[in-house]
Image 1 (cartoon, helix red, strand yellow):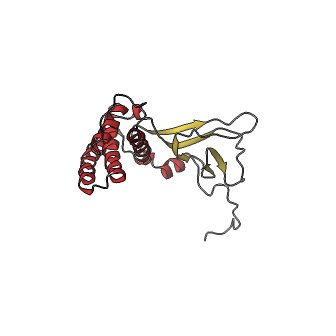
Image 2: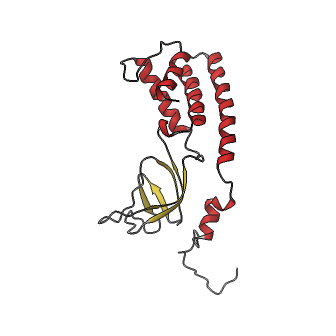
Image 3: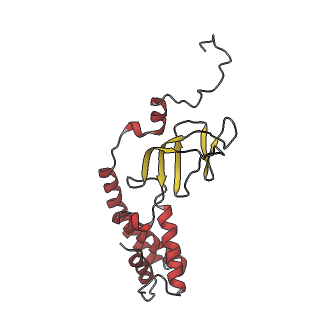
Length: 199
């Protein structure tokens, strides 16, 4: 589904005339685009088969030692528990610095893709949800809103089914298990104050 087609869906949902281009100076088009973009980002946050990557290496910048995270990365689970995502950079919570000085491996990342890169099942789901939200914002017509919510629900069933078919459900993709198997633990750098104690 092209973005123009999705916007036309939103326009039809509120009874507005369709357009031939997204560049027309029309307030309904601008509002429809805004709703579509908001839903496009929202529905991808949980992570799906098409926008989840594993064992991604992020390189440190020469000079600063900082490790940047692209803005489209919405979820970042590092292999080392002392590293966390702060803003658009990796932060070392143990040394309280952004100067990492080395590459950082993320066990799992979730990336927010542009509309054109989404599978058709996700586009359909996002478009129906955007229609429901658009109706709520522009018309406050609960009957029409519920209609599109139901259509979104049907689309979500197909989307979930495709997700289950496409992703390899594997316990070793669990962040805690992957961290343990790589030899990393949240407490690996903690000083043992009672080395002779078995308590």
